[in-house]
Image (cartoon, rainbow, N blue to C red; front, side, top):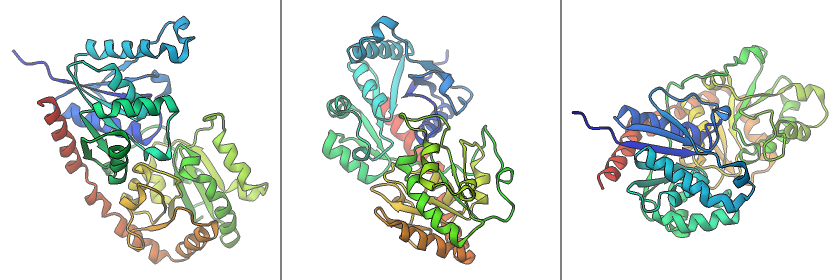
Length: 384
């Protein structure tokens, strides 16, 4: 008689477009292939999904509370925890992984006293994007309970150790998946760009965090030197986020020049990123803060010449300045960005040299080693 495989659950808000969501699904596939029964628990349903659920994974949605109970807002929080606790018990979960702050806190509180191991994964540098005060209190209370914290950078790990009592840690940066898989929606660069037009590429779902607003004056000044230059920003939804239409915001910062506006392309999310990296002359990431930027990792693996902001964490773990890319100070002026990008646009040989060195990121952050580290950590937890 065969033994039932152990069940691991991953909890997250939704499977919307984003690096945390992609990383969760990658971990889930590793676990599935290693023989685990994998359950993905989300607060929102499939209507918010961007990524398809890989074959063999079980999808569960947190139980919706009755409407009358939802009216109580924060006072209904204990009921949400009880619903999540019941779901963990019903699925016979032995190891659970909370991804991002709120799902992690909820998981730790809901599973308190249950015979399961809890892992936590922050996906940004915590002080750069603090949650609301009640969540900060609950994080400080619950994070020491975690059996293991999966941290992307040593800087993040040190902050969690010092400020949240997260003593048990595994340094686990994101792996580079190469070749990049495609998914829908698919949009070819040639459908939007003239064949020989130079193009600067940026990508991300959060305009303010990624510093895309900083690119508008830079693009405006560069266009005076390169009148055929295009700036493409992928990933921004046309729907409002936190009350702001991100696309309209960026266009308002660019000004009223209709020719310039026509060369700022905001096609939204695309699933064939490899084609866009291959088409780009430069990839830029002017972020205010990061966790461990997947888009920069992918762009380097694709051989792009990359320029990134040296924010608190992330880019400096990938870019060796002037060897495989450029790091500009976090407070670099628009003039500094213009000078750096102009120099690279004028020097194809330098772009090729940087891109060639950037490809070695495939070895530094290869999937096999990080997969082994992750599964070894799970094995220790499940037998601990």
